[in-house]
Amino acid sequence: MGAATFVEIVLPGKVEPEGLKVRRGVVPVAGPGQVVVEVEATGVSFAEQQMRRGRYYDQPPFPFVPGYDLVGTVLETVPGVPPELAGRRVAALVKVGGWASHVVLDALDLVEVPDGLGAAEAEALLLNGVTAWQMLHRKARVRAGQTVLVHGANGGVGSVLVQLAQAAGARVIGTATARHHEALRAAGVLPVDYRTEDVPARVRELAPDGVDAVFDHVGGRGVIDSWRLLAPGGALVCYGSAATRDDTGSKQWPVLKLLGRVWLWNSLPNGRSASFYNVWAGRAVSKSRFRARLRADLAQVFATAGRGELVARIAAELPLDSAAKALRLAESGTVAGKVVLKP
Image (spheres, rainbow, N blue to C red):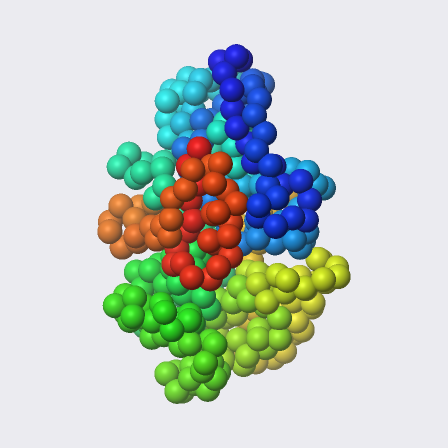
């Protein structure tokens, strides 16, 4: 295996997608407690869109290999790693490094993918699925009969949120551009056009008493409207700052400002709650607890898909060396679901 070649995509600096570099080399060797995973699918998330602009709040220094998550097959194991892992399809969150043909990972960070779930489908449900599940069930604790507002209901996370909320028995209002409304209606979502409609006014028409939860990846000043749309006892879950993607200046400031608003709102005695979701929360405190929670929640996501209550929304599947095209497509705002790269 040491003589085999591999491919990875390098982000050299603040560049347009066409500035990505292809680097070839030799497949790395696993160390103690590690495995080499041959990547079958990785994805384009909003994080990579921010990273190429230098706008992701804790990205590593340039140059580096992007790729927030991946699905692949364990090539072989080393002493100290369960030998039955060899040949198994696994999933992993990595934050960076996923846009490669092979990746070395700690065996404890792997989550096995159930038989019957394809690599691209599992990839589309990995970061998006665990994010949606944890926000819905661990943060907002959505219950049957409630009404929720999902911003970007056609997107990678948004489309999973919609389905998981419906599986929990909730009524869903979703924002999206008009081109996605027919599909959203067919899926049982009440669509709102964030470009042409007064979103707060329209949501109040659909939910006069307010909504029980809002899932907001947009940030910026619009998050104030999200807070005001909550019903008594409602929960706002923020998980991004898409509105500031093309801004200049400090990349930490949008997140810090959002955290400040969350703190202020939670200090108000009105029964509503606000939180900022980070999929990595708790990892620095206890890796074992973080891994157990990730494994349990992702198992729930995969099981929901296995029951037919959750369908992976794949916008496009492109080869790894078309990463620039994939990134352009993901940033275009014209697609529904996840853009998947297949080495």
